[in-house]
Length: 168
Image (cartoon, rainbow, N blue to C red):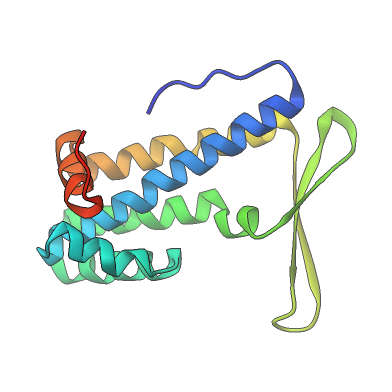
C-alpha cells in the first residue's frame, strides 16, 4: 500500500483518513477471500460467488474455520493476525455509526446505537490526529496478514482476474 499524504484542513484530513480506513479494510476482506480460495481449491469464480453474498462476519468465520483445519503454526499465526485486525480496527462501530462533530481540536465521534438489550448508545471520540493514528495501526497488520499468508501481488491479481472476470 502506498504512503498516504494528508491535507492541512481538518475536514479534508478526516475524509482522507476515512478513505484510507476503507481501503485497508477492503484489502483485508479481499485477503480473507483469497486465503479461503487457496484452501478450498475452488475456481476463482466459484469462490467469488460464495463470498459475494456474505457479510464480513461470515467471511471471517469461514476463513478462520478453514485455517483451523490446517493445524499448522502458520495458520495459527494468520488467525491471530486476523483477530488482531478485527479488534484493533473497531470496524463495526465505525461503519455502523453516525458521525458527529464538535469539540476542541476538531473532535468528532462515531455514535452507535443498539437495542439488543434495551437501548444503549456507545461513542468513540477522536480528533483528526488520534483517528489518523487509529487508521495507521491497521495498515501494518493488513500487510502482515498478506505476508503471513504468502499472498504475492501475482497471486492476488490472478485471483482477481478469475474471480471478477477481468484482465489487467
